Length: 394
Image (cartoon, rainbow, N blue to C red; front, side, top):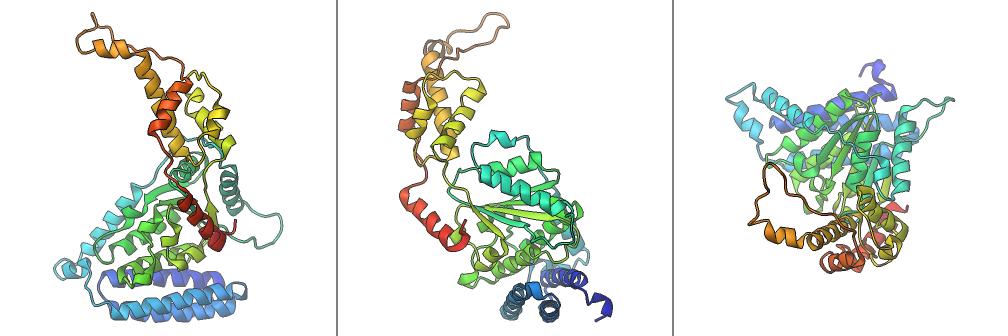
């Protein structure tokens, strides 16, 4: 190895390049080459551990992951789709790469959600904004600030994890990739790994970038079942979270899941922050109720603070559904006669049908509460709390 590579940054870059070569070799069906490259990466990680004593344990942990990767290659005798076809079409891999890049480009998203439109989650919003600021800003002294590039949002369904992502897209000056774990999973061997690689390669090219991975469990399920395809995807994702090949390009990964206990343990160790996005408290529930009624122009004839006390265990999404059902109950009540006549009465001339908007009452919300129930129950909440105490500690 050239002496020029005996620096931490250059060695990390070299490892990143070799990781991509492993993915290419796997997709091309050349398991022998992929295995040899694994040996190279393992050796480079050993050297990196010696050079960077501050992160020695982490590099040795990563090295063990690549030892497992090499073992899985040795037992994987399946041929990938691309291998079978490239015998007749030498340009197919390039065509597939272009298709992958096109799919990744389609994930670039923007939204108009303001931070203020999200009820509660103040701590979570502040942490995301701080992490992005300190990662992009320059310190006044020559210090090495711990990096915060990978966050995991976990908690019950409907608590605002996706809303946080939309606000990031609208309020942070970065390229935003909005992906669902399912969108990166392919039934063809090798394609999922290449999609993950293409996602991060594109994000680095468009740096600074934020990658939001919703339902990340669909991409990186635990490898305890011995699934070699899952193992390959997890290994590719691990490499990207470790930042090999990133250099000065800033890429933040924010993943979200409702089932954190299904994630591979090696993946969990790569997230510097695991943030529990729990159910809203009474004050936050009142704010969410207001956002979905008063802030949308409706007149409310009841005390929302009292209503919030009767919606314990409701998520933000549950509360939005509750308000929607109450609004519809009010509209049906206020326009019953007009609705009954609408089938037989044609508006004269070019006039349009109109309906009356009344005040939302306690009776409207009482009717809504009969239909809308919280998704979370005590058993679910206890499981989240247990997992939080074991893995998150925040």
